[in-house]
Image 1 (tube, rainbow, N blue to C red):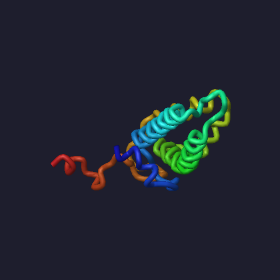
Image 2 (spheres, rainbow, N blue to C red):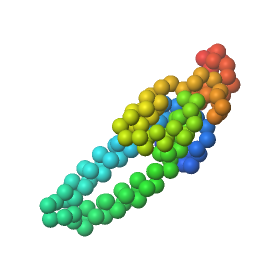
Image 3 (cartoon, rainbow, N blue to C red):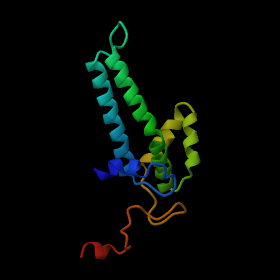
Length: 137
């Protein structure tokens, strides 16, 4: 559960590596936030044919500010996830290619990270001491 909020703790840390679980749990957090947003918007009449009510406008404003606040952590965790697969963050630009770009990034995000340290930093799965036997003793 703490990995879900790790990108928020590492707000603008674009260097280093991020595990798959850190990336996908943050993605799940964003999906849950969107579900809550649309549920609240529906509850306060945001989908009315006469236009949104004042309460709906307030919900839209609050959530718009919140989502603006998570753009930087979202980009940072994407950078770190690509770094974990030993790829440069420049690969994010492939998403500008319609259709195939997003699929390529999805595959990169699903791939396991490289074992051991790579040019972007130490393995995030490695134990701090580097001795697996010491962890289980």
